Length: 290
Ligand code: ZN
Image 1 (cartoon, rainbow, N blue to C red):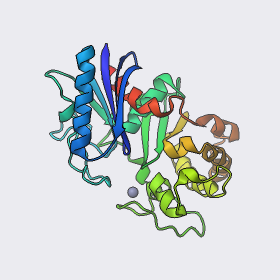
Image 2: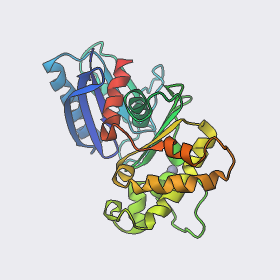
Image 3: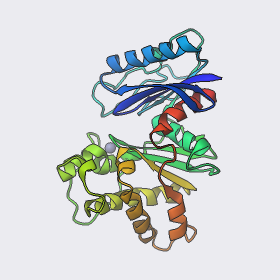
C-alpha cells in the first residue's frame, strides 16, 4: 500500500511517500505562514500522487491539535504559541482527491510509533518520545497505542522543580517556566544569550539543562513506568552530552525509590532516536498504514 506522510513541525515541514514505512520520495521546506506552508503540502502530495497514486495520508503535526475524528474541528490546531497557527485546519489542504483517508496525530505520537515499530523502542510496550527543539513535546504509547484521551498529552508544559538559585523567568507565553519555557531551543537561546548549537558539549551549561530535563524524566518514569524514553529533536540530537548528564542525575532524583530503575536500567531506558530526524515523517506514513 502506497501512502504519504506529512510531518508538520515547528521549524520545518517534511512530506514523504512510500510503502511499508520506507521513504521513497521526499520534499521538505521551512514551516512559515499556514497559507504558504499548507499550499506547499498540497502541491507535494499532488506531485507524489501523480507518480503513483497514494491511498492514504498520515499527518503528524505540532499541537495542540484536535485528534477526535468525530469532532467538527478534527485536525484543527488549537491555542498555540506559534504565531498565526491557532485555529488552522491542517486536514483540508491534504485532501487532494475524494475518498482519501487522512489520519492525524501529534508529531511526537507519530515519532513514538516510528521508534516503537522500527527504531530504538522496538519490543517496548510503554514508550515516551520527547523532542527538544523549537518546542518541547512528548508522545506517549501505552501497550503500543498512542495516548489521546480528551486531547493528547502536552508534556512540554509540565512545570518541574527548579534548580536552586536558577532565576531564569522562562519563555513560554502561557506558563513562563514550564519545561518548554526552560529548555526548548528558543528558551536556551534566551537563557544563555547565544545559539545553543554553538555551546561546546563539555560546557557546564549542559548540566543545568540536563538537571531540568532530569526532573521531567523522573516525573515521567513515576507516572508512566516506560520501558524506553527516546530523546529526539534538534537540541538533544545536537548535544548527546545531555543524555550522558541526565542518566547520571536521574538516580539521585529517584533517591533509591523504584529499585527497578537503577543506574543500569536508566541507561537502557533513556536513549537517542534510531530513526533520527526521520522518526516524524516515517511515523506519519505508519499512521496512514494503520
Ligand atoms: Zn508552557
